[in-house]
Length: 148
Image (cartoon, rainbow, N blue to C red; front, side, top):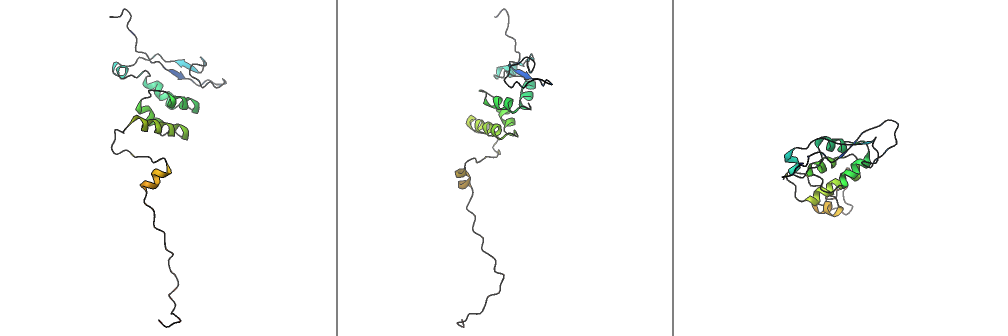
C-alpha cells in the first residue's frame, strides 16, 4: 500500500479565451491561454485508461481554434467516442483524419453504420454502371422512300 495514493486528476490543459492576447495554440505554451485542469476522474473511467475529464474533452472538441482540434485528432490512444465526434468536424482535414483513425481501430460496433467509400475505385466497384439514356423521339416516323 502506498503512503500517498495517486490522485485520479485530469491530466489535460484547458483552453481559455483571453481578450487582446496573442493566439497560443500549443497546450501549455501560455499560462493565460491554457489552464491545468484539476477535476477528479471516476474510478471506472480511470481503469479504462481515460486521463481526461469530460469537461476537457468537450472544451477541446468544441474549441474555436482549428489547430487545437487538429492536435487533438493527432493524439495517440484517443477514445473512439472522441473520434466519432471529430468525424463530423466542419474542417475537412480533421474529419477525414478522424474517419481514417476510426477505420484503423477495426470493425464498427454498430452493424447499421454507414460505410464511407473514400477512393474512386471503391465507389466505382460499389456502384453499378448507369445505362446511357436514349434520346426520346419527338418527331413522328417518316415513311420510307423505298416503300417498305
